[in-house]
Image (tube, rainbow, N blue to C red; front, side, top):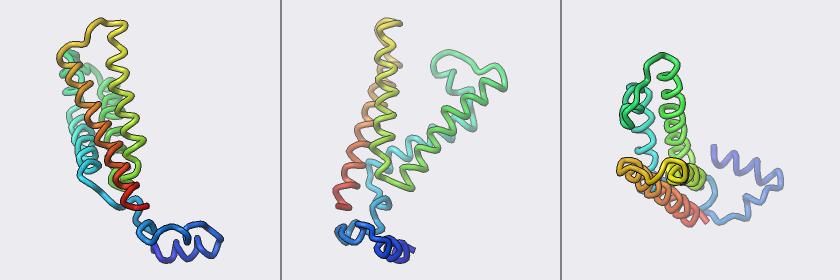
Length: 149
């Protein structure tokens, strides 16, 4: 399949033929431990949230009392992380975008201090975890990029 795609792209005048040999057809298949860790973390969060949505608000002392609230949790904390995990597996270079999104979550939690005061120990832990995951994903994506260029 990669050879066929390459041949079609080359015959269409694509610059693909000028890329280094290691780049052709492998760019988004090279998984490394940083990307794998991020994919596993997001897959775990997604599966747990999808199967047990009441756990998500319980972590912060709240509840999901009705079907709509549990459906929303499954969508945001289940579906989105599962999509992130699938993207990381299918295209490890997507780690940059997903890492930036993860850093955005940490930034949102940290910025909440402006309105809510100093974050609790639990929220500070989430901020640290999200920043570590974001850094791992961005570094992992850079390694994928470096390995394929």
